[in-house]
Amino acid sequence: MVVRIRRAIAEDSMGIGHVYVDAWRETYAGVLSTNRLAGLSKERQAERWLRKLIAPGRKGRKFRDTFVAVDEHVGVVAFGECGPSRDPKMGYVAEVYTLYVHPNHLGRGLGSTLLSCLFDSLIGQGVESAIIWALSDNPYRHFYSAIGGRIVAERSSCFWGRNVREIGYGWPSLVGWRAVAR
Image 1 (cartoon, helix red, strand yellow):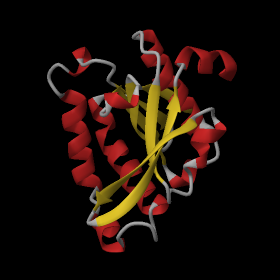
Image 2 (cartoon, one colour):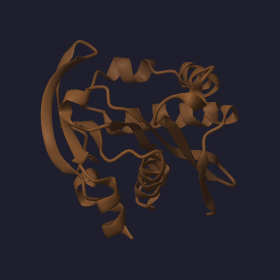
Image 3 (tube, rainbow, N blue to C red):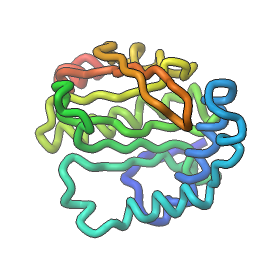
Image 4 (cartoon, rainbow, N blue to C red):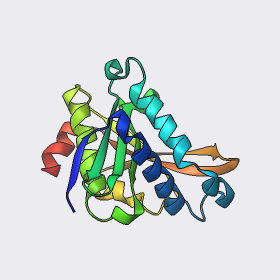
């Protein structure tokens, strides 16, 4: 299997939609509403991601970047997106909004490689810190601790009509993390 990591382009939207839905169904089975998970549409997600990837001015948006992992035979098997922190009061300049690996491709280092690409992009734009939020019931959330993220916050939110707990993992120094990660 040869997998290449690169910046996402509009043509990746269908693959991103597939990864997004399959990853959500796998990760949140038994955690979120079965009916809602079953109702996720790969086509609607693809349309959503296409709009995001071709949005006018996207390239000029502060810190925003999306990367994909592409298997030469399968297509997109993982992706991640970062941008400005949605809660700057937390003290983190940027946020990783999404980091999903297709369930058939877990355990191959794609998540950590994508996160490194996102962090490198942020560092290249002069960003010093980043945070990512994960549902506390996400069975894969400990991955963030394993790659140097520290639990820095917890919050409650309502998701699909259900109260959920989220854990914030922070990297206060991306340059420091990069130095240790190499």
